[in-house]
Length: 422
Image 1 (cartoon, rainbow, N blue to C red):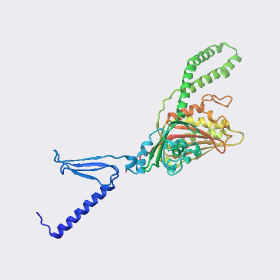
Image 2 (image 1 turned 180 degrees about the vertical axis):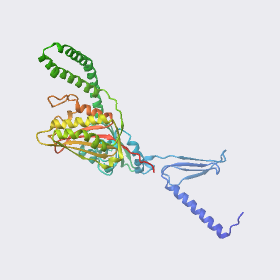
Image 3 (image 1 turned 45 degrees about the horizontal axis):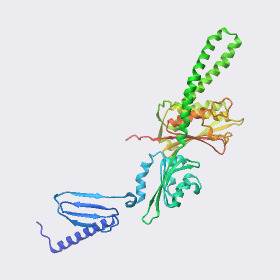
């Protein structure tokens, strides 16, 4: 045993006293309640909510070793709320509804990806902004702000402005009763409306396929069978008009069935910039030259590090449909088609824009409806089928009128390319 001098012993006691004060100071600053039991020392420390000093008691224990710690943390009061939001953000990004946290002044503190994507905003840029900048609505139309004004939660309120759906809000208060956060969750019902439309289309398509396709095939077969016994004038009519019209009707039925019934998607990883410049560009080049159309590209270089999982042939069909629509809208003057890509949150946004006459505001909300067409020879199925293909790729397709012409916006999820390890 080593003997300590008086001075060393005094210094040791002073150090131990400082350490005890340090531990006591640390325990005082813990905001959450806990209970710590040391069975070896037969002592228990307990701190209750709102209590600054812990209570230490002695007891007689049958157990002679081991410890037990019980912590009772309320995340809303015992942790800085900003840390809780940072923890929740990647989890809430997986939720397919709009989730937005605002403080008592309507300033956004958390915005999940679905809310940012559906409003067309940059999620990170929205943090610290007023919620009106995210929704692009006047304050009196924003339900979250009404919840702040009334200081009450809102349950299952139907929203009928530019966003259609159901909103719920919940309030978290500070100890003084002021609002710490308003949590808003908005469930969009637009997709449900589209699903109902497609369900009706599916039932109609099944009836059409059964009631019309078989007779068409029969008529076509008999025309082929009898035409050699008919005069040349009638044979020409059959070959140039009747059979092509029957084939056109059969093609319409096929397109409608493709809209109503999910098609098989054979996906592969595709770099969207390469796809737009090479695969699509090769197909558009000859048609653009033929119809006096110039095609310009503006592609986000950041997307060179990302891929989309897509069926190459089906994506080509979508963009060819859009290009043919632009051709049909072309007036006598030359036309330019602009194709651009942009990395937005976890999506690629592809803009397909022309400088034609645009889409009349009275019909723009209906152009994706099956059989809706303003062309004399149009079937009204091309855009419906295109949007169906994009939805099968877990994306969205929208349209808007720009300063000139129409602009179709396609959004698809992207995957970061894995970098090769050195």
